[in-house]
Image (tube, rainbow, N blue to C red; front, top):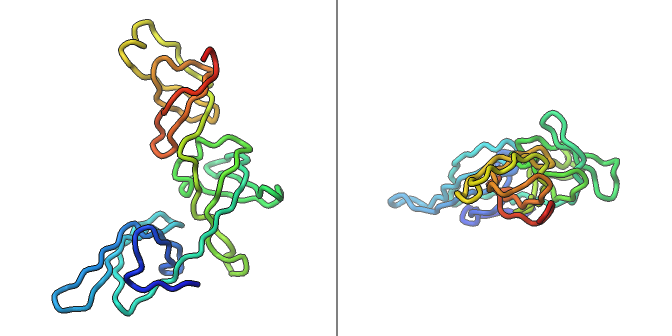
Length: 200
């Protein structure tokens, strides 16, 4: 396990704090008058999502969290839980809460491959834990429900709500029709572009 000095605890690093994995969202080293420097950091707990703002002093060290990506296949969603299986061994299954999915699970289709971010050691008491999901920046989904555009609305640049194949709703331009494939930004949940489908 790599140990980080107080000044190495910088934005983008992952550390173990109070026994749990955290992402460093921000850090600022400063000196109070004649005292030794202090690193004030903002941490996001990767298990709970809670943000805290501890300070690390010159003599402090932090353990760098060992994280690994694991490619898995999405199976289905049930009661706010998302089920995945190991790509090589379908009998090994993982469940991930909507909190860890950060609300993006609604853009996943069954059998799609995705990377889970894992923390921990299989030999430890807690074993490995899923602490995050690496989503593609954009996904392509088929529109399954769309109100027809009213003549005149397509010119004025209006928008409407459609339903895509995963059940998610998206705000799209009026010209989007049922059966078309659209690209959605998973960070914002916004329509990006039309990529194919019915009468494209």
